[in-house]
Length: 110
Length: 113
Image 1 (tube, each protein chain N blue to C red):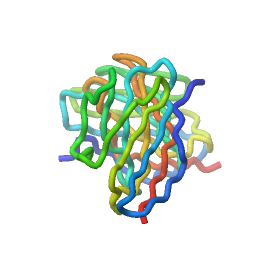
Image 2: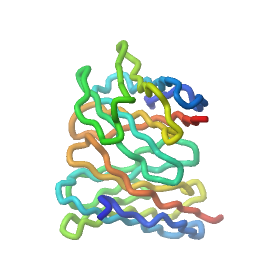
Image 3: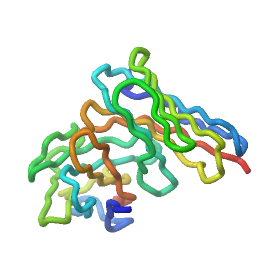
Image 4: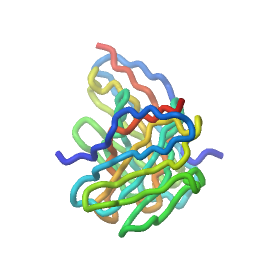
């Protein structure tokens, strides 16, 4: 069983739509949860991070973690063409070794 | 905003040659990492480094790999005898302390011929 599973997409949405990106994980020891954004030929850029279950909001982005179902979500409100990128969910037991999903490729169409 | 910088952006090397990938972590960060991403695959952990020693390494990080912090600013990954399957993007990351996430550089694309 893969440690972090993520639909690779691609996901195409019209500008202004609400985007929902999701991951599941298998290791109950994971306590730290992150979302990174990766543009083509660039490194992962940290978007959001959270510890344990709950919601965290930052501008147009909301991260949700449900540890009981091992489910991680990222919501993007009022999506913009500049949000077009690959979104990587990531988990860790202690922010040391980070385990990544494959990434979901998002395209926001003007 | 401070960032992790990596050089070169692209390295082409003949199979069997040694290669050194270089990273300058964010200046006040204490924990350093290398990851790799083979084309179309996940970003994979290679090694973590703290207080001048390896704290954790993956199965990928075999005897052909080594890391070093030769001075107060650089962090390097050496591959002793490169193989075709070492072709990948290599990312350096750093973090400041416990309970803080890692920040990544833009990577070095390593092509083995």
